[in-house]
Image 1 (cartoon, rainbow, N blue to C red):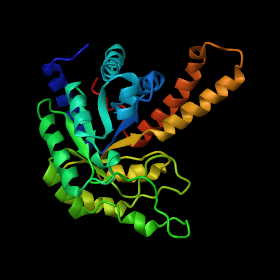
Image 2 (image 1 turned 120 degrees about the horizontal axis):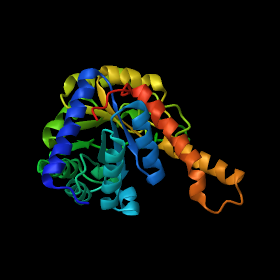
Image 3 (image 1 turned 180 degrees about the vertical axis):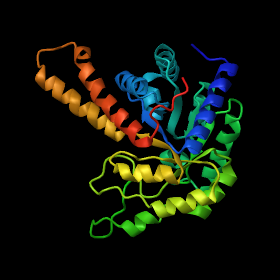
Image 4 (image 1 turned 45 degrees about the vertical axis):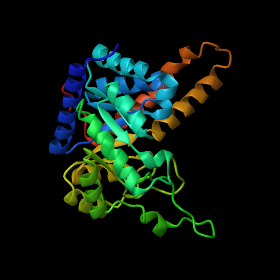
Length: 303
């Protein structure tokens, strides 16, 4: 059921209030990818158990798979039925059009990442597109999140070895962060300090000293993407420094896949797969609850 503009604005005002609380009280809100309805159930049930606020994130591909109106309705249904503080965010929206579609659907948070779909986009095009989304989002009050460039994978040198110095060239800097935020008017800056999307063989190491410098240079909220597989102590230190939102996806998907494969192997004659999903949902829920503990959001729900 479509939301009225008044309802959307009330929801975005509440989301803004949550981000202010997280910053003032030194916790981070977990932003967990939707993937499918079973994963959404796991996120919602974890929010109930932990009495934690939560953001459900949907990528462009997830939106195309499930339908934007269906996602909005499912999130609202669980939010109402379970009395939880839950918000919906677009994750790495690849274009201005995809961001505007999510604004119109009542998403409370909009992550626009033009370079994700177009790595060759110029800095000027990225700034212009991001600013346009921030301007459009003022209609509903949605929080807009972005970063200058998508970060994914450690470059390799001529011998196929990880080139960590080249990788660091893509890190945020205090000055570039400040300039990007001032030029675009975004509400949340997605910092690149060693975090990486997806699962990687090399350990994830966050540059916390750099994060401190970025935090001192900018006044908006700071998020961390690529949280999967990152040792928890980095998150806890980053939150103390001033990170307010942390995105998690790969850890949940790995738990989902491993538990589903195990359930199918142990029940080779069961054709009604939905009967096996409680174990799968529980496995993902445990990951979400663990992150909520780690992020300090337990007991922070206002629902």
